[in-house]
Image (cartoon, rainbow, N blue to C red; front, top):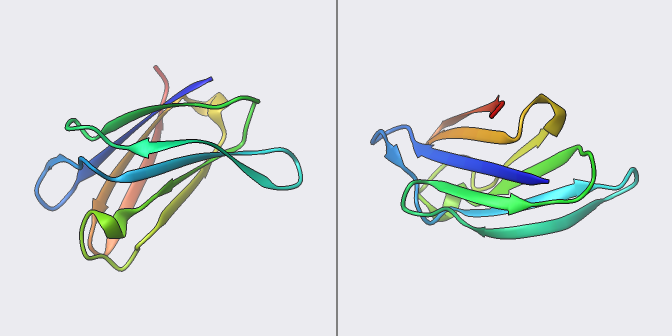
Length: 100
């Protein structure tokens, strides 16, 4: 299954490029790494994972800017949508699932 993750710098209103992202899958007992990379100049990354979920996206927000959340983790059910949108700011973040 292909999962698209898009990250926006909510302070500047621009795509957050260079954010490390790791996608994990849950096998019913533990989390396993599926794929990882960094967001591109549009703040996006497409990752592949097997299984029906749930999935966990781990973002290295602290490597993008100084933040109260050095790592953001979002656990989601891919049946709700295959695109995860995040807005990052130093003291807050929001996440949404989008159906494509």
